[in-house]
Image 1 (cartoon, rainbow, N blue to C red):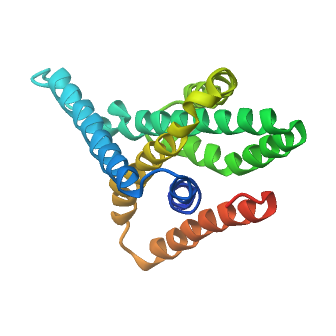
Image 2: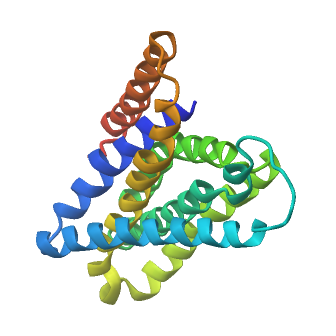
Length: 223
């Protein structure tokens, strides 16, 4: 399921969020600069988590089992929450914009976004579990992250005329988080399983994650 979440995260960012951002009127160079800043920012966020965790356990005299550090730090878990929160916030703004333009369009947009988000939220839940979160904790944090869509909807309704131009940049920042998590945390874990017997299911499940996002994009009409 970690393999499938890689496909979902990469497909959501590279085939959905980033194209939507670059199809806007925003300057492509500025968007690429935002992507670079986002990747660097998530690198620093992870580095701070590693340093904080290392300092906390330095010289404590306790031995820890294999995988303890990753389990305790949960770095990818916190990063996925930040990235997903930004993405959900943007979706809320988009839904508000559609409702203001036409209530029917708003309803269709809300349904399309909900359908498109389902596989991503499942992938996020898997990442949280993989990062060491309990089921209950992963569910609660994922719910809080999803609630950012409501906040985005309210903010979008109140300030749409002034803040709509920021949507592409928020999409790029969210995408940088998804890409960083998939490439720097999840894929290296998968590379530790080097046998053909383990590699074939990984490739299949990554592809399945991509196909799920593509199919839902086709069904809902989101590109």
